[in-house]
Amino acid sequence: MARPPPLPGVSLKRQLLLWLLLPQLVLWLTGGVLAWRVALENGERGIDQSLTQSVKALARQIKPIGDGLLVDFPKAAQDILEQDPADRISYMVSSPPGRFLLGNAQLPPPPADKAQAEPGEAVLYAGVVDERPVRVVSLEVDYGSPGSKQRLRVQVAQSLTVRERIAHELLEKILLPMGLMGLVLSALVYAGVLRGLRPLKRLEAEIELIGASPQPGHAPLPSGALSTAPQEVHSLASTINRLLAAVAKGQVKEKQFLNDAAHQLRTPLAGLIGQTDLALHEMQDSPARERLIKVRAAAQRSAHLVHQLLQLARSETTVELQPLDLPGLAREVARDWTSRALAAGVDLGYEGEEHLKLQGNALLLREALSNLLDNALHYAGPGSMVTVRVRPLSATQVELSVEDNGPGVPEEQLPHLFQRFWRGSEKAGGCGLGLAIVEEIAQRHRGQAFAQALQPHGLQVGLRLPLDQGLPSGP
Image 1 (cartoon, one colour):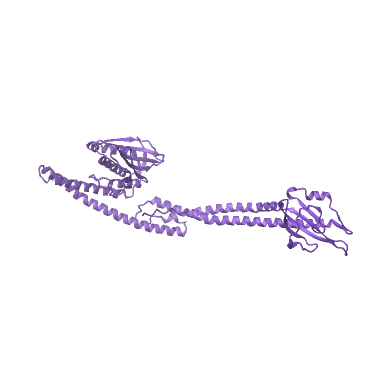
Image 2 (cartoon, helix red, strand yellow):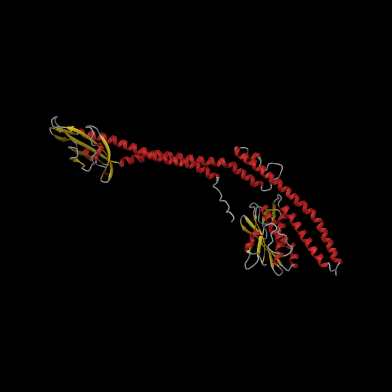
């Protein structure tokens, strides 16, 4: 069972941003939590100090008179303490401790571990009043005569709302500058990552510019373009240079061998075909005539194969693109093939744009269209219609195609049409290289070849080529 193709990994830019910004986010959140805790502690410390001062001041207003107490606590002071319902300060006086005398009877007593405090020692603890958390301070004092000492407890409580308000204020004052610093730092990190990856972008642009056919004998990637790049990028470029140089050297040897072999075969094949034609002319009634016809057919197929090999080698070389009128070229090629179409009983015509300029190589595009027409006339059959078509697909792409209403190709065979030496029919005359040449030519023009079945029957094969926006569309 074939293994599925590997999924593309996360880009280097995303990885760098992730590992640089994620720790910053964690530190920012951790700093926010710590700042919140510090703000709460500071707020609680401020409340404790205020409550301690308040309970001592209130205790001073309670004066013993004999065995009794005089509480000198003006009504105005009580109103001031309780004027804010959301952040009110409550008090309670009890004597003996726990026996309510005045104030708010709902104040909780000190916890058991703090109930045995020394007189005059303020005890701080947390409690709940009216279902709201409060901070309570308790102070016990002795009064009375030496023979009959008594003890009273003074408690003051304050809602923790003020602590949370103070914490929020402190947090805003701390986190706002931290957030601004985080944004500035994130922007600097992002800009630094983009700047650091810029040499890789330049390297990518250089590779795309040079293309897949580097010239041997020199480094394909110019070192001047990467003079300011980091050392790692220079090492990568040097490795790519060595790889491309080795590939280019192998390609040159392969093309040279193909050219030499094709040229060496063309001359004897042409001679063989000529001698066979002479022999057939002289042997009108000979029994060997049928064998000579088969020999000539085999020699013609071999000559066609040699021609296709030469065109394939030519299409794989570096292509020089020039402005040309694609519809004009297509009509010219269609006219050249008209006589052969008539001889094959095929109706050949052109449909599409009148004028459309693009950057291309006229020789290679002519060869590609000739291969498409050769296939269509060969396999569509007598009585069929073949149409050369040029139509823009978008503002940046044009389609050059040949379509016929012949028997077509099964859907499952369409992906194999552009494979070298693959043939979907046993009909004599083909060698399986024509559409492979078309695909090579399309790639040399920065385009792609395509094939699709037509309904109810037929086939459309062609090239989709990029349009140069700087060229005029008219003649």
